[in-house]
Image (cartoon, rainbow, N blue to C red; front, side, top):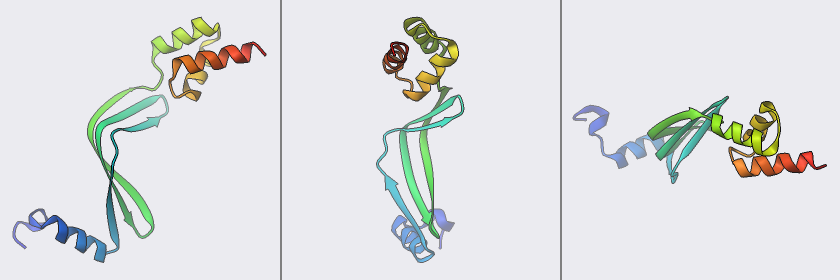
Length: 114
């Protein structure tokens, strides 16, 4: 095996992994979004490989990474003003609508109208 595993043909590597009970499958993903607390990590363009071993799946993601706050300050202020609600209600509505400002405002206005 010249050059170690890096020199191995990808088909040989796939066959060897299958013999060891490891299956890998490329996922056709354009973007991956990870929301962790108040942080949103976006990987775009993304290359995703699903690896299954002994019934457990894991995902290997590579691409261009961008990190931002899941709820932007401008969005919170706009929802507070348009829906005439507290900061806490605006944040909760934005999280419930996955950051869709219009949907958050409409939802809050319909709640206030009840």
